[in-house]
Each structure stands twice: as structure tokens, then as C-alpha cells.
Amino acid sequence: MNIQFKKGVLELCVLALLDKQDRYGYELVQKISDRIAISEGSVYPLLRRLKTEEYFTTYLQESKEGPSRKYYRLTDKGRDYLQKLIKEWQQFSIGVNELIKEGVRGE
Amino acid sequence: MNEEQFLKKMDVALKKLPDAERLDMLNDFREHFAIGKEEGKTEEEIANNLGTPNQIAKELLATYYLEKVDDVSTTGNILRAVWAVIGLGFFNLVIVLGPFIALVVVLLTGWVSAVAFIATPLMVVANLAIYPDSFQYFDLFFSIALAGLGLLLAIGMVYATRFISTGFVRYLNYNVKLVKGGLKHG
Image (cartoon, rainbow over all chains, first blue to last red; front, side, top):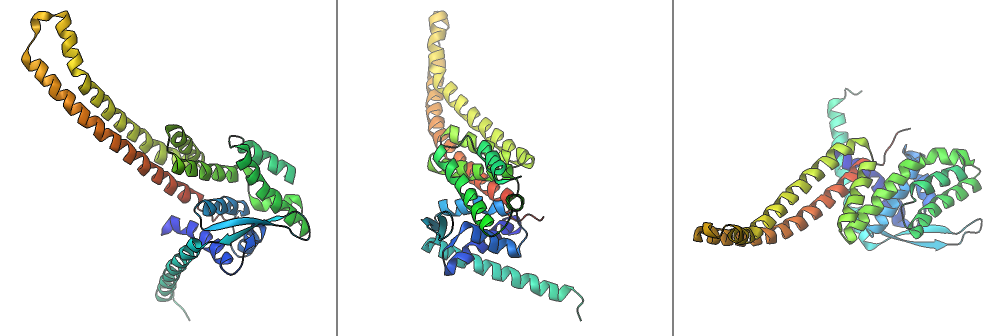
């Protein structure tokens, strides 16, 4: 995990946000940066990479206000990958939490 | 930095890319600015949150070139990918350029030996032409054996070259993911 893991988290967040519904870039970036400190711009190269790896497809859709927006839609391949990442993440976070419980003097 | 300055910087940093690709990348950011402004943010605020256009462009370039190498791994594409990955940070100079030079040297050595082995019978013939008296059967047979060895080596090198370049591309990919990290504080 380690450094790969950092990258994996952002990837996991993007894919997770797309599981229930299609979203546009700005929306994805905002949702993530509301909770995690990132340079927002770094999400866009990630989006392009995940697209070339066929984890999702894009389409343009008109919006009522302003220009049309690029929406991202998860593919089956992306969904499988998301499940794998979620499993890894859960194991990892359970492990970390257990260690904290064991190591930190609590109440 | 306002929107125009941000996009301008990014455009310059991406100028090596084909127009279609570059415009598509810029469009993502134009859209980002447009929606941000609808939500009442200033251009400066949006640009600040995005980070520096140069760094983002570097990540875009690296991703683009690696994708290219995956399609067709020509020497030019591999070289461009190497430069793109090095561009991600000085740190990479050591861990990318080092192995790259080492691998190129190994491949070059193999190829030069193969060619030299294959050429030995020619040298025997040339030697014969210059000093007809010095002919020895041993030289002839030994050179033919070497030429055979050279042919085998050349065939081996074809596979080695292919194997090493795909392996290296994989290493580059890993590297880009590693450097990109994604999580930056502040």
C-alpha cells in the first residue's frame, strides 16, 4: 500500500462518487475537496487516466445555465475495480483502527 | 491569477500535444471555471484551489505519453514518456534516468556483440585478401562458429529488447502513479 495507497484513495473517492449516479467534473472535485485537502486540479489528470483505463465513459449534457457539462459514467469494469478498492480500504482502515485502539492510552 | 492567465499558462505547457487533445484538456478547466463562477466564486479563488497550471499540465502530459507508449512502443514514444516522467520531479531524475541509461547500455552491448560475432567470417575473408599466406582452417571454422553464435545472440536480443522495453514502460507507469500521489496538503 503506502504511496500507492494515497493515489488509491483519491481514485477510490472518484469511483465511489460515480457508483450511484453520473456526475460532472466540477461536482466530483467539489465533493472531494469539501472533505479532503487536495489541489483540485490534480483530479482532472486522474479523471483522464481512469477514462483511458476504461473505468468510466464520458458524455456531454446541456445544463439549464451556462455551457454543456462533461458527465462521467462508471463502466462495469470500473464497478469491479471499485469493489476491489473498497475491500482493500476496509481491511486497511480496520487494521489501523485496531492498532490505534491497542496503542493509544484511551479513557 | 485569473481564468485567462491560468488557461494561457496551461495552453503553453501543453503546446506539444495534438490540438484536439490539448483543447479537450483546456475545456475541462474552462468548464470548471464557468461552473465555479455560476456558484459565485471569483476567478482568482477558483484558480487558487486548482493549484499551479504547470504542475497539472505535467501530470496531464505524463499520462498522455504513457498512454501513447501503451499503444505503440516506438523509441520516440518511449523517450518522450521518459522525459515526461522526469518532468514530474527532480527526484525522478535518479530513479528513472539511472535505470533507463543502464538498460540502454545493456541492450546496446548485446546488439554490438551480436553484430560483431556475425561479422567475423567477413574479417577472416578480408584478412585472407590482404595476407593470403596466413590462411588457417582454424580461423575459418572458428569464425563460422562465432557467426552462428552471433545469430543466436541477435535472436535473443530481439526478445530481450521487447521484454525490457515493456518492463520499463510498466515501471514508468508505476512511477507516474507514485509521484502523482494526488493528496497534497494546503
